[in-house]
Every structure is written in structure tokens, then in C-alpha cells.
Amino acid sequence: MRTLILIATLACAMPAHAQSLDDLTWLKGCWRTQAPRDAESGSQTTEVWIDPPGPALFGYSYTEGEGAVQGWEQMRIDAADGGRPRLVAMPGGGASIAFRMEEQIQLDDPTQIAVFENTAHDYPQRIIYQRQRNRLTATISRADGGNPYTFSYRRISCMAALRP
Image (cartoon, rainbow, N blue to C red; front, side, top):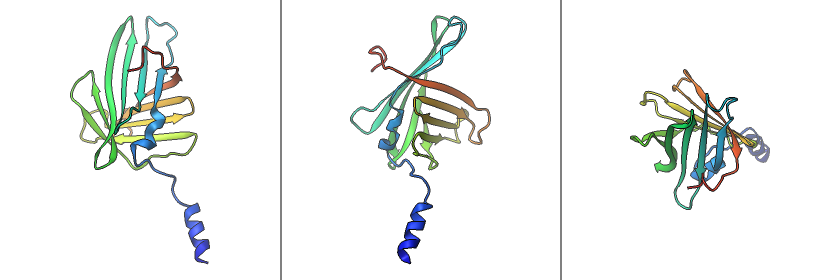
């Protein structure tokens, strides 16, 4: 009888949650938003994540359009918060802003989701990364989900010029 209860409990258990940086390596790679129809009037964002040996994932992104770089950002995901992953962003090379990883991280295949929050920050307060096969979305919003903005990426080959 105890065995049946244990099996039933395990079957109803919640999906696995990311607890370490290793659980977030699905972000690795080169990602790009779809090119606008008229490249001169739109913008395109490229985001690159690498997983070098060591206790962090490193990333950068840049947005280009109208023949110029319109914005850029350096990022890292480390485990400095008592071992729990956090995303640290430095938009335009400015001061770092840390977002603590929330527990609602689904690692079910084929979709992975990572939620980071910092309710003390003005905007964004929440960053959600979601990967489904060769697609990645990054949604920034307020902590309550208000004022969302989503970047929809597709995986691209990491050209030598994009690799750090």
C-alpha cells in the first residue's frame, strides 16, 4: 500500500524546476529576430549566449536598423544569490541590474521557461525566456505582467563574427 501511495505521489509531482546554471544551458546559441520587410526602415535584434567553463552563462545583444546600432546590452546568468541563478543585465554598458530567478521554471521538453524578477526596478521588473525547439522568446514586463514587450527570435548559425 505504501508503495502505491509513493508511486501516486511521484506521478502527480510538479515538473522539475531549474535549480542551477546547468538547467539553463538551453539558452546557449545565437538568436535573431525576423528581418523586417524593408531593412532600412526596421530594426533587427541579435542575442548570443555562451556557456564557457566556469560559474556563469554570458550573453550580449544588439539591435541594428537604419544602418546603425540602435542599442546593445551585456548579460550574464550566475549563481551569486546563494546558489540560485540570477540574470544580471547591463543595458548600453551601464550599471548592472540583477533579476532573481523565480521558482516557476518549467523544464518540460520541448519547451523551457526561465522567469527572472526584480520588483524594485522601474522597468522591466520581469524577464521571461521561453524556448520551444529553434524559437526563443524574451518578454519583458512589469511584475504583474503589465506593459509587456516580446522579442521573438529564431536560432541562427553562430558566425565567427558573432562568437566572443
